[in-house]
Image (tube, rainbow, N blue to C red; front, side):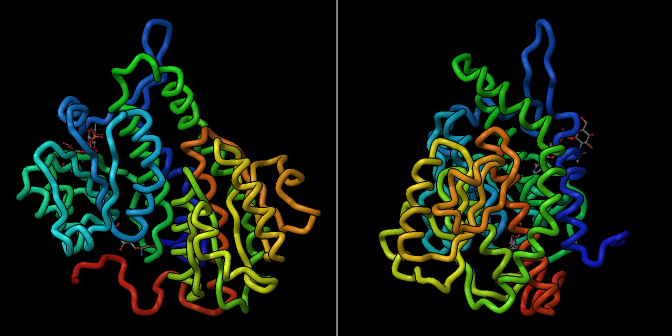
Length: 371
Ligand code: UD1
Ligand code: M6R
């Protein structure tokens, strides 16, 4: 049931304040006079000790689920102190990459039925790793075959393009980082700030959804383009990949997410006065580096659309020449949840304006159960 919406993708983008609320329901503890703020993931509580002792955490997924894990990687590394590596499921299986008994492998999948991810799970089970699932589908193959896990509880996702599952997956993996780091006194203030940020997140997502019309206007400008680049780094490298995946998948426009730190190692050659480029430059430890990226792209006459923190338009728009999209600020590690929303809206509007099928893009299936 699409309710007041024309498409499932549109509905699922707009229901993110609610889906995030259900993802966090019963799992965040507000704390009080003698109790610290904390996180309770029922499915993991008996396994946290094993996870903390593991030599490595390996995230495994495909498509958007991989991108969600990439978004959560920095906070997991920070709060756990354990090396976190990333594997695209098919690539791990192709390489038969080393997986050890001392590893915690985390399988991220909205459907819980993706063939590549399931095959990687089988492989990790054979190699004796602890296997943790993060899935939206109770009773799915991944939920059943993992040793333990967390249901993201985002509600049924129907649009082939994953939107609300992406933001809920990031939130669950941030909660996973908080739960693993729970026994470390030195990071308590940081963890409490993130928990406060999680409580506020649904209302901030509601705010960023007000950019709907602005993103529709932007889509009108981009309707006939052949290509769109998206530059991000740090917490928002994943946002660049995921924004580009959305545009490619539904609007059928070539789009590439680029790690801004790699700009001079190739992508800069593409920049001219015609190619539109989105640069994500919201406030975090990488902000000044992104300001310098903007200046260098501007020097090559790049057609820039800059996503920045509210109030920062003047600090990012060189010579007042860029188009600026301002978004609300949240705790740095949660910012990818906010920043993806305008790009989801952009992909949605571009698709509708270009006359393509939003909910069922050509050649794609919601759940990829064959290889
Ligand atoms: C569980 C209940 C929820 C109830 C809550 C009350 C279910 C599905 N969830 O939620 O309805 O409100 O207790 O305390 O009944 N698991 C895996 N692999 C996965 C995902 C999950 O093995 O990929 C396992 C977990 O380890 C856990 C179980 O499935 O044993 C349920 O996980 P989850 O729904 O996340 O647990 P709770 O949030 O505690
Ligand atoms: O169900 P899963 O999360 O395992 O699916 C993985 C990918 O097939 C999926 O995210 C795909 O990339 C989406 N269509 C992206 O929107």
